[in-house]
Length: 409
Image (tube, rainbow, N blue to C red; front, top):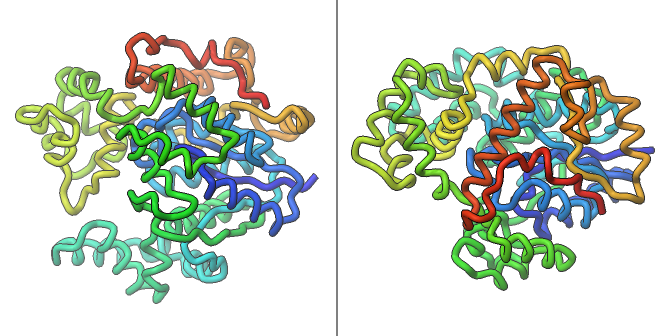
């Protein structure tokens, strides 16, 4: 059975996501869809607005047949690590024929040419030099990187600087890295991906999150599939959403006050003496936006700082990320949910996957090795941290990874 794979965050799932799935199924001829989804935290280093089971259910209601979890070690990382982790889950599932992703241009050929140029591997030294030149000229890091890559590869900066294009290039690189037989396919995304305006017909996740945080629930719901309204409303009424970084300020201050500069230096994505700047940030700043603003520079974007702060909270070290990236196979693939009418997909996954399949975490000690249990423990910590940021203290119970049922529609 032809199967389409998508790597997503669904933070939250909105009408634009539903459109992409529908178009991708038409274009690929796929009969079923598997989504690899970030769990409690997303690639920008932020807590997901809704918990992962709510987001998985929304996806299952709108064209996805199975949702697999992208481990937080990969999900809250750089574009390269995020993409490689997502592609690896789909690749090692053994079920996916086509990998689909959104892009601003919808031009797969141009993106493949960019990857074919080996711009991020064979000429890394030249690119690094040009990035430094751009930074010295006062450009932000993303702008300096795009300019450097365009200079070296002669590929349009439009391809190299837009957020979905950047991820798309990393997906294509990952397919090559794993020698995957999955065929790539891209669907054009319309509008400004980072817009905070709800003016677009399908809305954008960032604008929807902002509206929910500001209490503009009905305005936000106009951009969410109608069949998800009850689901999302239930999360809002139970005060388990929306979740934001503000709820983690106390935990972050405590963690930083317990750490030395040497310990921070070992954390993933911390480079070039940034550990001292991070430690000094809490001397004069308390509110999280002020802490991030203190640390942020043109070289270090807000997104990267958010990821680093999350890595500090979760104690994710650089060597840990490298270790799991270099393993021959994933320690496990975790199922978050599936559609009853496609129940055979679970059996197919168990039969074809290159690693153990987790559906009931209570059975993990019986089927996982030491690495698997370590990665799962990190996931539990991430979920517990996410619940600490729920709007209502009464909803902040621990161990949801072991008590929340699979999302089954």
